[in-house]
Structures are given as structure tokens and as C-alpha cells.
Image (cartoon, rainbow, N blue to C red; front, top):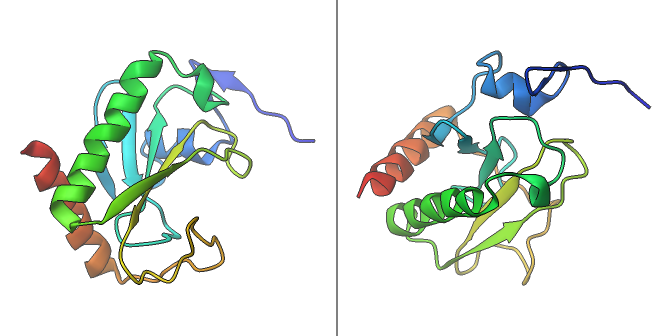
Length: 144
């Protein structure tokens, strides 16, 4: 078992808290006072985004305000659907690898190589330029 120390709602060894603090650069697609959304570094498809609360919370169901959290996920979803022309989006809230609440917003495309539920072993590789372009497209679509 490992220990974590909370300082002002931030866990000192939590990778997502370090992203929130700006210690780890990440391709951000959305940010407000309470939430941050960024591209997954091991995406299942183009536009696979994580939506997290800025304050360290262990489980999705404990995030407050809960409704605003899911409204943020919907805002990101609309950016993905409109910008990347995904066929649909799936939400996944496993929460066992990184111990910080997060919603996976996974775009699905015809022939994307995944069965009905995404296959975690089939992550996709994208260049830095492709990541940057994806961020730009989603951000622009969110502003619409």
C-alpha cells in the first residue's frame, strides 16, 4: 500500500493532480475553474479524452457538483462529435489505475477496430502533430 498526502485538495503523488498543477504537460481540450479535460496519452480512438475534477476526489460519484461534472463531459462530447465527426461516444469510469476521479470520453467510429465495448489492448498511436490537431479541432468545436 502506498501513502498519499493531501495538501489543499491536491494529492502529492497523484498524476492527475500534477497535471492540474501544471507539473506534467498535457494536451488540454477544455478547462474551467473546477474541471479539466485532456487527451488520453494511450487513446482508444482519435479524440479519446479524460475529464477530471481539479480537486482530488477518488470516485466519480463523489465529485461535487456532480451535475456540473457531467455537463462538462457533455460539452467535451459535443466538441468531439461536432469536430471529429464521431459516430457516437461511450463513457467509461473505471477508476482503478489512477486513483483520481475521471471520465473517459471515448469517440467511436465505424470500423475503429473495437467490439461493442472498447478493447483496452487496442490503443492507437498518434504523432504529436496529430495530437495538436485533435486538440485544436475539439477546442474550436466546443466554442461553437
